[in-house]
Image 1 (cartoon, rainbow, N blue to C red):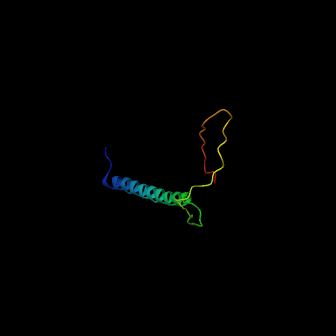
Image 2 (image 1 turned 180 degrees about the vertical axis):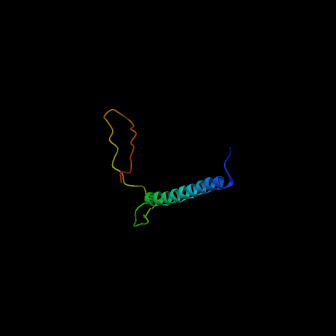
Image 3 (image 1 turned 60 degrees about the vertical axis):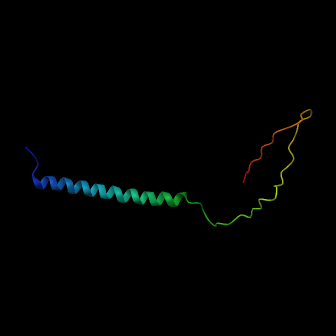
Length: 76
């Protein structure tokens, strides 16, 4: 009719072992994926001078237009 006490213990033991295995595998994958997303070295500081305006090429303006909008991006 029902499971005996030993049968229930076996099921619980099996469930706990599977849960522990899943926790260990998920932790290992988390550490592995975290290391994979870190940027590669060497790490260096960049010199910035906020008071200086950057040297940009002149904005091409078509003839007959008084003002033009130029957009510059950092392609590095």
